[in-house]
Image: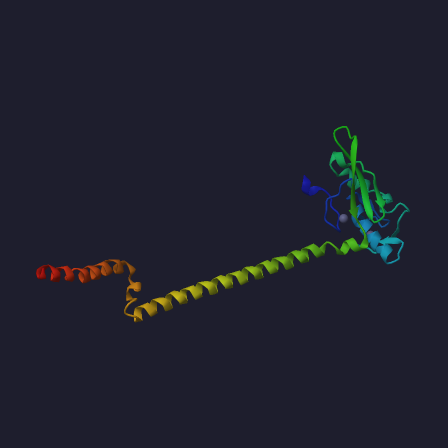
Length: 206
Ligand SMILES: [Zn+2]
Ligand SMILES: [Zn+2]
């Protein structure tokens, strides 16, 4: 059921009764209020007073109250869920589309929800993604450097161990470092053999 809901052909968002209210141009093409407001901001930036349809290039003059005052498409509104079939009051506040959202069960409190529709706001969305991509690239590079550093450290440690063992192997005194298990058994044997003769020689003499 949700897939059959009509969507704006510019932003591919499903229509609703607030910022995505389906608004009809003079050429009968329908787009959401937010997209038409952005188009209007671009037109004003280019010192044009009307909205050019992005599909057929037909110009539509905009009322003084701005794109919110454009006619709402009743056919598309009728295809929305029941609670969205009555368009909410959305107005233009400078470079923002604003909507007063009632809060609480009794609707005693309300908050303003505003969307920036200025011409400069159109260029801002790609920036976070670019920054995100850059930061991801830096992270990958950092990981690469960390990996390289770890590999070099490991290689250096291996070379040090090998060099130390080879040095031990070539020197007579430290030959035992190659076989630590046998060292423990060999060194006491040597010490006992060196210590035992003196008492044997001393006892007969006494
Ligand atoms: Zn749209
Ligand atoms: Zn059109």
